[in-house]
Length: 464
Image 1 (cartoon, rainbow, N blue to C red):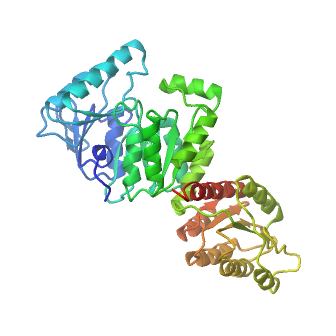
Image 2 (tube, helix red, strand yellow; image 1 turned 90 degrees about the vertical axis):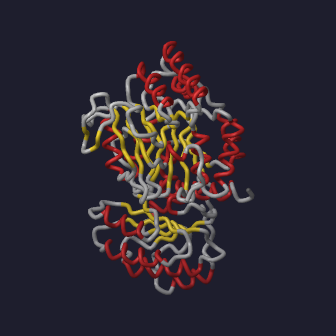
Image 3 (cartoon, rainbow, N blue to C red; image 1 turned 45 degrees about the vertical axis):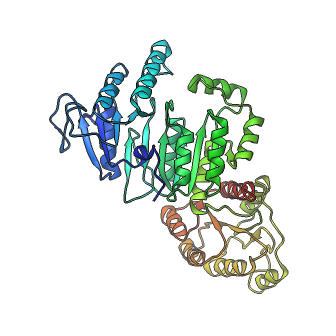
């Protein structure tokens, strides 16, 4: 179990009150109630609405004061001009942890700044912890036996050991969608919003200690307390990879970030140095951040830089070789003993080098025999195998996938795989490979990008 902390109630509450609950699923309160149910949350749920009655089989409390005691977490989904009153009532009735999802605070002009100051003063005086405001909420499926979702995101992530903490709700929404489209094991997402009390640092500290969390993805526009941020990242990176996309790496981006959060990110060189010193693997696009989630979900320990490219098509092998070198990976020559074994059964036209080209007509027997030799020869020569499987019309791809998946189950070396071409059974083939512990990609260059990210974590934190 994870170490307890003040924010445990925002990630794993045993009970929650939803102020502003409604039957209409398109309302904020209705969406949060729906998502609590969709997530499979098993704790106590108390809808709060002055109209009373019943919503979806749950008895509605007319106010927080009317409840029979405080809950672990109060989710507030009312108009901004009513929020101070609701939080005051929460404090009066013994509630301590408040998740404020609506905006209308520091980001909303003079009136919003006044409301922000009032909420901070109230929280300080009454000993409250405020999540948000102006956030999209929290989903935590890291422990499938104890799921939780207080959010108005429209879908749940796929589930798994990867967590994402973000200063943008839209970035999380994209990650949730990608978790299903690309089989990314995303199990927790946190939208921090204005971060009144709980921001990226606090959640990073907590998830860094959570053994159920295998990798942490960050979308950041401002570090806040940079010294504490770096300390939290270094502590987490000792146990799991921390991968960050830092928005605002250009002058135009920094101005846009200022308009978004009110803070300007440091310049690109300073950001690069900060990430290096903090053990953070930095990415420069959302695409790469999501690739990192897929790769580290399978291999949280990362990989070394020496890779073998095993392909059945020359062109993708060339592109993969270029991309691998761009990523800082190394393609060592094949050991002589491996070359001799491969020559014994591969066609004379096959390229016995690195990349290995088995030719387009390679069937299951050729693929599996080559992989078996590669795995036998890998010790001391390669840190990972990157496979490219182009699916031609004349080869039974199903048999190839079955053979490779069986060998991968017992492989002692990390394997990444790419299946390219017109794939009528793509979902099934990908599922079989990934069930064998092999992250599978549609694009050889993306596979190499993912391998490069795995390598950078290993190199960056090797002496930490």
